[in-house]
Image 1: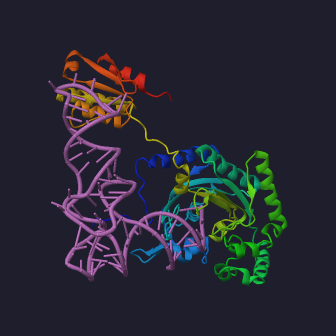
Image 2 (image 1 turned 180 degrees about the vertical axis):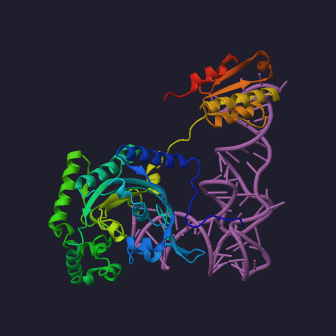
Image 3 (image 1 turned 120 degrees about the vertical axis):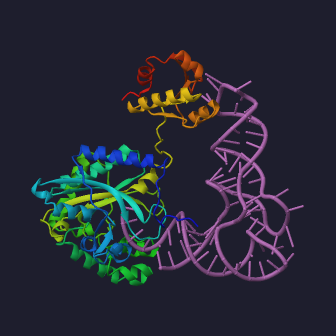
Length: 420
RNA sequence: GUGGCUAUGGUGAAGCGGUUAACACAAACGACUGUGACUCGUUCAUGCGUGGGUUCGAUCCCCACUAGCCACCCCA
């Protein structure tokens, strides 16, 4: 039995990787136009970083982390998300002393020990963005607009931007209590799961799919009615700016976040085309996080997108691998050597050129050229070489012309390089 | 962590207890000794996830395990 990969950790193979590259390139490009720079942080961090930021009692920390001790007996964890490491780096490198505002994005693998299913894997990938240092609701609107812009650019249409506010440490506890009280009075109507969790995670009950729970919580108090003055004003300003800018959104007062650090604005990009994994991107404001991690008291807001889910949504609109501009078919050793040298020179000048390296029959070479979808084939045999000529075949039309080898490089480069 | 379904070649899959494991696609080569895509031909599983069991005999029945998928939970 040969060695296999790890459950829930997938290879990204040619044919699929082009879509990944496209999604990443678009992120770099679009985030760049909004003033974001990339930050690259390690995949492993001290376990404590995630416990403190995500929350000791969250599912992620309680049962989903890949935690191990290194040879010095430090407890380390494969990052389950990207915000905490970025904040750690921000604080450690004192980035706020260089610029009061940081706009950062990252991409890379995250790890969560969950049972794999559609759109959910143990190693998965996120593209995320964070803004640190701005409290004004304009930045909330800006981040949401960028996210929305990204989805447009990438051609993923079947999504809806949902918005909510979770309040702040001032107003959230009161709401929480109100909600627990409400649920307590209706425990019999709730499903087993909800009866279990209404104390620890009352918000989750609002999101339950069971019909009994839906009915029982129909009249439940809304977070939005319990926001304090500051949070309420912030939330309505965010909405106002979004309307001004023309970024579409809907309000979902029952939206829940799984990480403890979120405050005020939270949001999700949801779809119904992905089965039960309906969030393609999610994020929110985390005004207390940086201070909690020992940094300056700066506000922050950010989001992460699940790349596997984006790829799934791209579906059959996959990005095609690039086709060779030219395939060199040679007959005989001399011609093969000549072609090989020519191909190398063309490649150096940016032409996507291919050839058969093993001296197969012309038929076989053309078959390969066809398979690779080469646009043209340059055929050089012993006869042509002697006459300093070559046949240039246009595959699509099957037409063929005789060219002089003199100056052929220039001709091929000018004729075949796609206009940029 | 819980549940349901599935497990035959490079891929999609027939076969459902009994002599050569169908068919299609892909791949390689040939018909065309120097020309792709069409056509035709040839080749391509010594084995049916793994381990047990039932049987004269198992890819087909039973059990266990493993893996995959989907859902719950949770989340990107």
